[in-house]
Image (cartoon, rainbow, N blue to C red):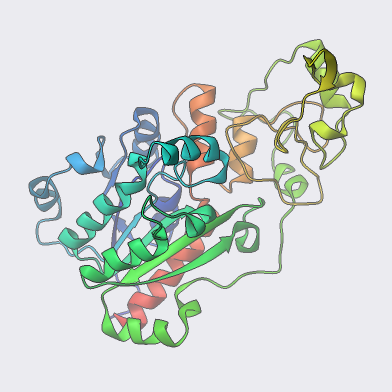
Length: 354
């Protein structure tokens, strides 16, 4: 296959387009995207205005609709990130309750819908992103989801491989672990991956970018979209001022911690490590979530634009929606810097083995 060929890619569970970004930058032709969330769909459309978008649940996209779009075009790569909230440890209480009721979170089965689309479209390479916690999760029958996913792919002729990715080792100024599944039906590539699955994933880098370095790219007077700051109450600002670099709620003086009465005694309320978390200027950011995060050197919360930069989105990437929606879109996305490196690796695999 000739070098620099215009390969095709399509995505499901596209969100605001972080995964698609890297493939677009590596000269892949994006055939379509998909998400049911209106704000994320609007963000995707404004950044990829020429790409068709299915704004509805994946299970409602019919084979006829896909065939009409694809026609005689061969899809080389399929990418997607089925909902991860149903696997993350941050959702443990909800998962325990479902377990007691012997029910599954319906979102846990959406990867089956993704695999149905793989069966229909027959791409040479499939990528699927999710939280690292998925690797330890089991269904109500006790089966690991990694085994369930691998067997489902194998049933339609694909072998799967996966790797836990530490995003800070791929140019993203953020500590964020995700699992990337790579599936293929190409025998030559399967043989190579069976010998060494690492050839299917980009190499890690020793060049770690700190939060302070990444945020220094924004000038103090620079006017950017989504670069507005939360106005804090005086008592909140006092707490923020007492958080040291890299610290959080537990580092507050006891007089500033939340208290409540328990068994007739006043006790200090415990909080998660993300509560009142301040970034350290000389370390990568903590995982970007929809929570408030304190700037490493200024006594305020990060703007959404700063969150986007720590997620490795370019400064001119547009986001649609209210502040909370934009924050969640960023938190859900595959970091563009990693997607660029992954897309480059996928192009090499297609050139060499497909």
